[in-house]
Image 1 (tube, rainbow, N blue to C red):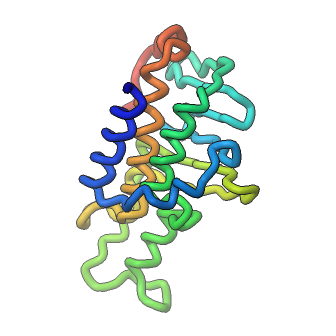
Image 2: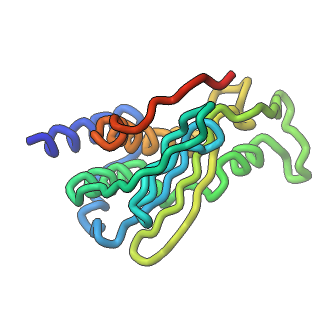
Length: 186
């Protein structure tokens, strides 16, 4: 029942954000899927199913890493969201991709394009293996789209996947038993 509710919530969220449909996941085997996801300030938080570890950013106190194995049922939920958000269709460097869309063929800013830079608040690096193919995707908040309509769809889809994984991590006993973070980032 809990799994059904979690998958239903994921599908509802995906529908609201326009990430696609889940039909493709029926052909995906969770046994062919692993990932390492770095997230948060400078990507200091990490979940890694290749090495079965979870790293928490403790801010002033560095990081803490613990052994962490995701149950197969939850891995299936994560794979379903991965497919719903069409992660395999995302560019390798979402920020560079967005930057290119704000420039002409000569690399010059398009009229009205405020090519701004900022220090990223959150960075994301997703390395995944699916059906024996390994790929890495990177992005960060505060990208070249600052000051315009908002981040591109590719960044929003990656962040939706990251948020889904983070919500799961934060709900686990392993995470709750880790040391509390001390301090804050400005």
